[in-house]
Length: 118
Image 1 (cartoon, rainbow, N blue to C red):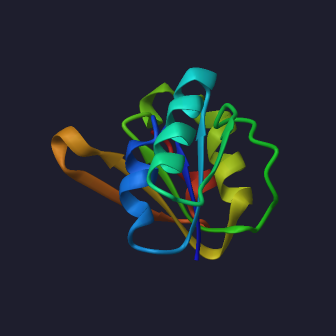
Image 2: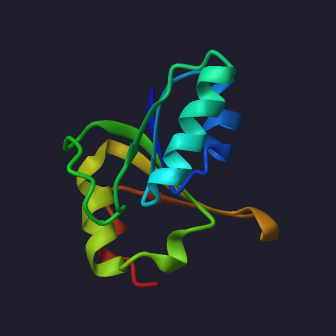
């Protein structure tokens, strides 16, 4: 399975790495990505990290099985990020919005992402 995590500070991507799969982590902050790379290297984890805004990642279409957004979705431009995420997900892919402080987990199928209003 292929996963991408937005705005990671390294934390959720590195924490979830132990469950397997191939992980990609993105953040708009180059400093956060540098720290995530350092933590991954320190723990011998093969994770692809790069700096990008969630609204314009330039990643391949129909590529990811799961996309997560942890503690960050409220900051995104929904009119741009939802089509971006929908395009990156494989058929029947899942988008997981995490609000850890409130323990709220919302799953959305790729087929309905563009029609969601937040």
